[in-house]
Length: 123
Image (cartoon, rainbow, N blue to C red; front, side):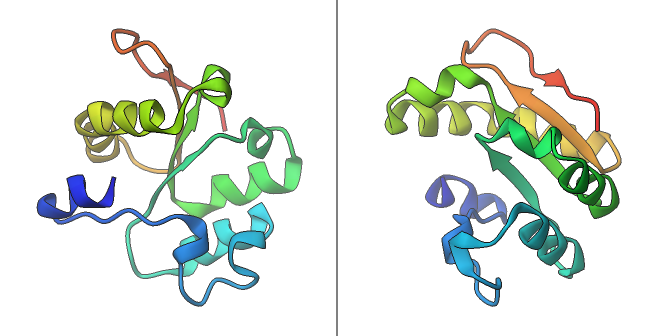
């Protein structure tokens, strides 16, 4: 993903690669959300974990965060990683468009079918 979007002035990082993140990849959702909120950089996050919207503390943190988030539809859980990556690359222009048109915070579900529109999720 990073190799594809870097020429557009963007970059992609797995949570385990984010320097200075307390507890690295083992950081609680509230921790990484707050870390990204406090950063001077503009962040978009992609997650396969819909529970982030079900936990009250995490949901409140997302509302305060000023982040754009994209949750992979549940069907991605059984999808080979190369296909997940290809869908992220395929949808990247749509992801950028959403983040440019709408003020954060936002959350969208990314469907697995290429012709299906992303669905806005309530925060």
